[in-house]
Structure formats: C-alpha cells, structure tokens
Amino acid sequence: MSGSVRSGCRTLLPALRRALFPGVYPGAYPGVFLGVFLALLSCLLALPAPARAADATFTQFIAALWPEAQAAGVSRATFERETRGLEPDYKLPDLALPGRPVTGARAQAEFVQVPADYVKEARIIQLAAEGQRLMQKYRAALEEIERRFGVPGTMVLAIWGRETDYGRSSDPHDTLRVVATQAYVGRRKEQYRDEFILALKILDAGAVTRREFRSSWAGATGLTQFLPSEYFKHGVDLDGDGRVDIWHSVPDALASAAKQLADKGWQPGVRWAYEVRAPANADCTLGVPEVQRPIGDWQRAGFSPVQRTSAAEQAQPASLLQPEGLYGPSFLTTANYFVIKQYNFSDLYVLFVGHLSDRMLTPQPFATPWSAATQLRTSSVEAMQTHLARLGLYTDKIDGKAGMQTRTALGAYQRSAGLKVDCWPSEAVLQAMRAAR
Image (cartoon, rainbow, N blue to C red):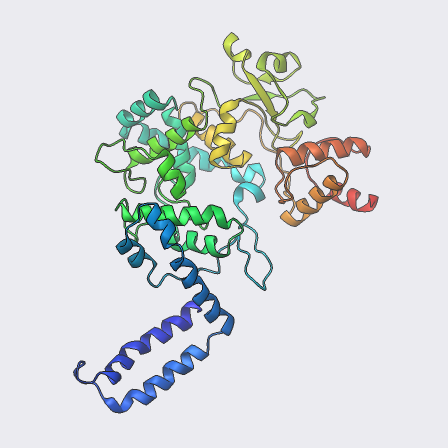
C-alpha cells in the first residue's frame, strides 16, 4: 500500500468497529455500518493490485523467517511485536522489484563528487576544531581505546565526525524496515536476511528502542554507523554499564569503531598515508594496491614525502594513490589505509577521515591543492568501464565509480591510444573511446 492511501484507510477502522459493536462502543450507531464498510472497501480497492499482493507476500516472507530468528535466540514475543504491521519501503535504493528496472545504490558523495567538493577545507577546519574539543572531553576513553586497540583517538573521532557529524545528524530510516525490505527485494538478499535477524536480536536484547533504532538507507546505524552484524562482531561496552550502546554512549561507539579497525588488521604506530610531491614524469598507472614498494624506494624514484620520514617509515611498504590522476595531491598509502577502506570502500572517504584525524593535531592542509577537475556522470563512467573491459584492460565491477582500478585501466588505454596519460576519466577520453569503436 502507498503510505497516504494506507493512512486514509486506517482512519476508517475505528468507525467500522463502532458500527459493528454498538454495545461495546458508547455513542455508536448501527445504521452507519453499511456506509463505513463501503467507504473502507472503496479505499482498499483504490490501491494498485500489485501493491496489495506484494505487501501480502512480504508479510508471508517475514513470517517465514521466524525459525531463523528463533535459532538466533530471538524471543517469540519480540518477533511478533516488532514484525506486526511491518511494511516494505519500496522507495529505498538498491532494490530489484519485479516488473521494474533494478535500482542502483543511491549516488553517494564519495563516488560522484570530485575531491575538492568532498574534502572541503572549510568543512575539515570545522570538524577538526570540534574534534579537538572532543579530544579533551573524552580523553580518558580515547586513551583507553588506543591502549586496548592501538588505534589513535583522533582516527575514531574522525570516523564519528564523518559518519554522523559527531552525533548531530540523524538517520532518516527505521532500521528494521530497511533491512527487511533489502532482504525481501534488495540486490543483496542473503546478506540482509542475516542483518534482519540480527536487527531483531538487537531489539530483543533491549540494546536500543525501536523508535531510536534509526539507520541510513543501507541499514548502518549508531554514532559510528554499524550494520547489525558489525554490532555483534565489533561492539564494545567501554563505559562498563553492561551493554553495548553505539547510539547514545560515545565511549562505546568510538571503542567499537576502533575494534572494527583492529579486527580488520590495523597496525599500531603506522600512519594511514603520506602525502608526496610526485615527479613531473610520474607513471599514474602504478596507482593500484598491487604495486607496493618501500617508501624509501618511492622517494628515490622522485616521490618526495611532504613530511620528514624516519628510517623505519622509509622501510614500510606503500602503494601510490593519485585520486585525480596526475592532477591534485599524491599519496603513498600504507596497510592502514586499506583497513579504513574496509569501513567505507571509497578512497575519498579514507582521505577525508585520515586527513581530518591529522588536522586535529596539526593545522597543515594538503601541500598540493585539489584541481578544478569535473566528475563524469555515473552512466558515463560505466560506459568507459565497459569499453575498457571489452579491451581486456579492466576486470573489476562495472559500477560507474572511478576508483583505483578504473583510473589505472584508463591510463593504460590512454597510452595504447596515443593520448595524454593522466589517468583521469574525462569527457574528451570518453569521446575518443566512442570514436574508436
């Protein structure tokens, strides 16, 4: 049912009850039964048949999940209470609805904005100042987090700042409804089937109320944005109150974020990345995780770190990252860079969080400014990836996201086509590809 039509139908139900049971409801008039019944029938018939059928099937789908919920330890009372009246949200992205085109994931800023728009200096300054204040407020918790997990306090503060603006932004969706809908008609049904069961388990444990169990369209919830499965894998009760509360307890949320990084391989004492000044003849096609060299070797090849590095740091293996190809800043990324990337699979997200973490300790912006490059539309990047895949230069997903693999494959194409090798997906290169077909 559509929300507005369903709401209108529901307003007629009390009148129908009064008409059916005049002895129970004072002031009821039996004679109005026919009129109310016909009005309710008309209301229901106004709904599209597919919507009525789909909702009925959804209800059956949810009911059939009870054995899995029971096996996970969810009580019957919780299951009945939380699924009663549960409805799918067909407006969510990333769905595969019968009879409709598959909807892609909502265009996230990390994948559609150029770096200069995503890593805005004014925003970094604002969040860094607030982060410095919060460093003092939560000093004891942050020191304990670094002691237990080896993750700097500034790093988990930066994640908190990027994810929910230090708790000031609110998630718009009912988490249970999101994961139920994604389990029913999402493009990753099996994953979200598990998330739905674990969301019920969170509610069954009383970790959060249903009203406060809010999330993004993808089901990430809490101050540091965890999926239900991540809550159970990495949740930490740092404040010692006997429960893991990532929605209200800042120590719990920050410790849980740190544990997630540690569980995914965080290396204590290793920086996330080093900004470098690239040589004029830099080969941007080397910018993939598979090409690793000690930082000292990169330095001898002309990639000069902006900050002085110790002998131990120069021995660390690192990969080249040039988010704007030959334009804008260049970085040498360590293993910890890719740990953060498991938190959010976007280079710009990692750059934002890593740089924000640094800025809480030093006022230095990036040494090389971002260029004024424009970002191709997702559909154009998809067309570019498809062409590169057809040539055997690109083997990753066709997703419209100009990440490391896309930029490197593009550089290889530019070299083979006699074009300027800058590893940046521009309209001019796309037109050259179309002309060559």
